[in-house]
Image (cartoon, rainbow, N blue to C red; front, top):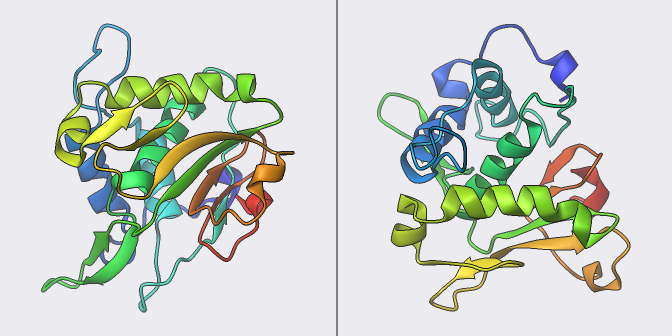
Length: 200
């Protein structure tokens, strides 16, 4: 899905995990900077629409879109949105679990989350990493999920497997990695273990 090709309106509440994800993000993530720093995270109207379509599902709970691309002008808020989505993919209810009694989808966490922030060099991942750290520092998510928010990695204090990590797109260390969500610098977003890294 490309942002310029999004369908009109928003998906029905029975056809997107995005509604639950938005509520979750507003509860667990904080505004990282500015005059509202520390307040609950809030998506802009266009970001809300993107999230709803990004997490749209069919009647079987399968993704409508396996890949998504977000293309907007500088200053639109791409980095904060992608930072929020990285957090959602790390600890949020971002995979289909079942339908509730009203026919709405219920999400679950990724069992072994490996979220990668990819760029040509690690320096290019700094803005996104700093935004993620700011959204999690002293947030409800940090406390409830027991997060260790380091300069490079974000992981669980308990030692549970899973992390958000910066990587270089040319790194040999990527071989064998099974990312569940990748945020490359200029490519579409990608989720799902079967997808290649560049297929974000």
